[in-house]
Length: 207
Ligand code: ITT
Image (tube, rainbow, N blue to C red; front, top):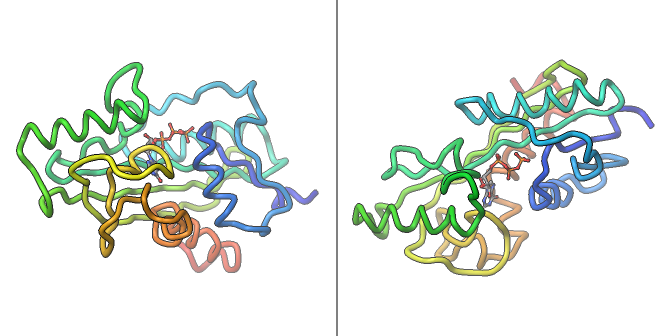
């Protein structure tokens, strides 16, 4: 198989992989993630921006897998204006060492409650930076954003992470209440992948 037809997603988060698979359709002959490479352990996300962490993940995996595939990483998270951009790059570990999605959501809702920020003042956005690499070379960087606000409480069952407390702009339901195809049309990840698809057609068009 030509290495450009083989895509490895540099993530251990299967929810991300599932969304990326749906959005890329049959563009690639094969899409795998790090579940297929258990020998690649956790990659330290020591960068201070989404871009730095996305690059760390893509290049680390690229170096280990050589030129046999192209690597796409996804570093993403939620920025809340009333919390000065937190949780931001710390979204996955917002509530500390043993953080999980539920404890992270609870900490976010508790902090907004504590400072008395409600309704329209809960301005937030999801951000996603993807880095495409082959071996130790970065081929391109793709950015995606979706604006919205934080709900007053958790609503909905679908999705993952902060989906049940994020209401995208123009809607009155959380990502976890909306159909997955709606999230996959407007999300930060969908926007970054749209840029990736444009790059695949014409690499010079995306800077
Ligand atoms: P990898 O680093 O292995 O890709 P991760 O889940 O640790 O997996 P990040 O470091 O990028 O990924 O952290 C992303 C955080 O933001 C994590 O808490 C996610 O739950 C959350 N997040 C990202 N995209 C999201 C989405 O579409 N919906 C809800 N939460 C999301």
